[in-house]
Image 1 (cartoon, rainbow, N blue to C red):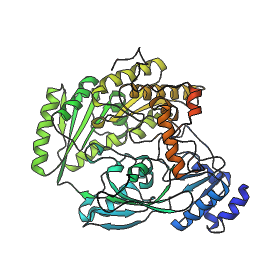
Image 2: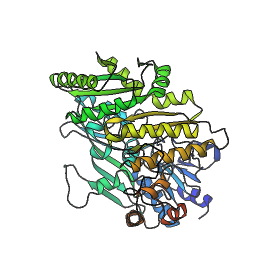
Image 3: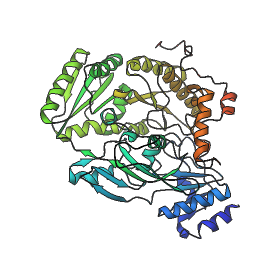
Length: 484
């Protein structure tokens, strides 16, 4: 079916203004937060209701038209990159909080609802929604489900998958599925976990039931300064080894500290090689005891300075600096490339040394800011896309970081997904039989491969062309880098 025929069909059930096809109207949808990859969609559809989405999907299925779902566009792996011959399905207008149940401690929301809006709606009941990505003021919950997002408090409270109970999902044929339930468990295979993090490749989420938890009586934050990154990495392991599960534990290196402090003036120590933020929350007595133990551990781990927040405003100020790391990077570099890999905590110091070595090799600065408690790294490679060949060099640098994560016993994503950015590294992390199983699952939900095609799971042919091998248990590939 020609583009004009598709436009005519879409406008038979959508308002004219909900079907975009002029280049100037398509431009805002050409990329997500990872702006290194750009592609104009053929058409953008902006449905207002689930019934509209059903009709869009049925049209796509009948005409073999690819369809890519999009939320707020804050994703960082190219997961919402449009298809040139497809429909970009924006869910931004499905942005209603359907119900908040304070007794069951749940909320039913549409996929276009902002992450932070859930906590704002539940605050009057003394409740909030725990996952808090740095983009929570803007990111949508549907996108959080698609990427299994986390945030600075995911160490204690978990990722999106740990904080949802039920999904309402549409298949590519427009069939409605109810996955999960109101109780903590349901019979059969765990399709709720399968759908969470599936990057829009298996179905379109139209409603999410999330868990709400009580707002803690007290929260207090410890900020520890270190003159050596390895000492800070060891402090992370020491806190966990002591049986403490902080509400959040974040780490920043020197270049990040300077960029953030110049941007926000959060009170960070500019002499530090690394800063560790460690938060305790709960009852007043519980927090006081835990903060005292954290202080002791930081001292024993070699911290040169230790401060704790004295009030809520100061606590939020410390966190604001961490959450401003990405915009701060935008002030010190024309472009930055945000990576996302996860490693065992005990490998933090070695991997950071490896990243520093790669930074020197490629001649590119790298800001390291990450969820230290669960080993989720977010290196920000600083580059200038206007310099010929610099983006390609940056991508190669980022790919080596991800492969280093694999060799350290980790994985190529922690919360940003695979999308387009990391699809080649999937060939390194997984064997051909594992990739074949992923394709079989995709085929079971989407036999025509119309939902977000070409993302997340590479074809076996692509891996063969790359000459990639499964090396998770293999020989160390980066012999010149720090050993693990």
